[in-house]
Image (cartoon, rainbow, N blue to C red; front, side, top):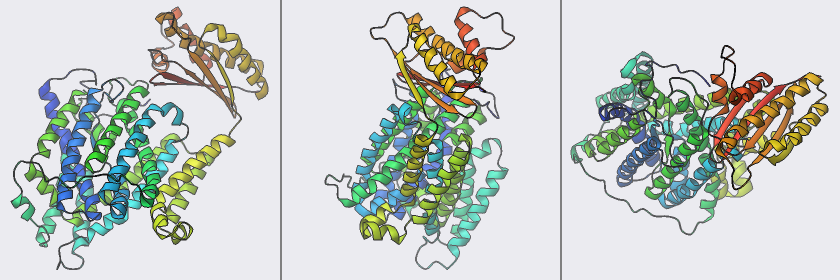
Length: 580
């Protein structure tokens, strides 16, 4: 857990009720943050796909409605859906390149069908998160994120040349350069609440330069009504999938997994920074945020627009600047975005932004996305094995992207679709992760009932493990004691809840490492997080009660304890150091 680095102290935590006026005021500021990327990401994808103005207006309108709905749902948290935090949402820029490929190959119908299918993948990821967490790791997610940024950049540079007929050569480059410089200066110099409107300032400067060169068309703004709903294009689905559909499906599925992992990472960061006092991560809320994002992808497929994506950096900017982390703010953000979605004149202004300005915005956004991917890898830690995964996946992903070799192997049509660097890199990273996991130190496994009667079996299992490791008596005793106290701690809540119809199971997986053994206890749900309880214990505390005695002993024997709470299952990871 990391401490907050905030501009303002937290005045309202997520569960604390703030006044409706505060929720709406802070919500307005949050809406200002997400409006520019919400509109521009759709504009970039649909323009590059060759779709007409009817599709463009509808795509922006639908994206705003979906982002408003998902932001509100994340705050409300219904049953197993939602984060219960402020989660600002906008269309996923990482889907721009694959959207262009899908629409160009099979039309909006193929694109919509792929999104609907992949929404089920993201919802499944939320439910199967305890199983998939060791396969689709931060190293895989970070590597694929960097490849996504590199694959989208050509679209940004193509947008620089998207100018009216008769425009002078080099005008697009000048406009894009000025917009980039303005973005850098404004971002570096803006402080406090000015940071909330920094994107709009740089976009306004870029549009002013475009107007000076005579490439800004204001007819769309003049002809747009003040309020209304755009014309509905011919929405539909591909009910008879062909080869192009099946060739695109792996790329969409992999991007969906990466989007889900990024959502997990964003949810963790938002949780860490929404409290006055740091707490252990509640992975049930992480499952909730991914599930709602899956619903957003389903809605995006039904309306044929870009799928939504959570953004932790902008969410934290809003929380840090206002000191308000109350989940009611999510509803305030949704109300403002809904109003602006029906404010046709405002949408027309954003849709009029010239291609070079949009291209400059996308260049900076993809640069930030690339850095975000690298940070994800670094946060997980780099050792020689992980470096090998990143290096090989990046090399093959970048080297084979669009290479004729893929067309030679799979044919012109299919090879062009599956020869995507993101797909290749993701497959390589996942296969390498599985290979390294299989080739790692030999794991041993024990399955027992979650009951104190299982202690002799657990003790024998750990004693045999210590012997195989060649540990001395003191280290072996420490390992066995850590196992006993973890069992006692897990049983504490079960005993309070009384008898259950079915005896819960406990699975222990031991992973020996150099000078250490990692024990993973997988059990049924308890109410309190062990990691939080350990954080509350101090050496200066009074004599412990019977309830926290096991916690103190576990704290003493283990070098590290991590508790991940999911719906229906708890995973406690205990690391114990030893020597021969």
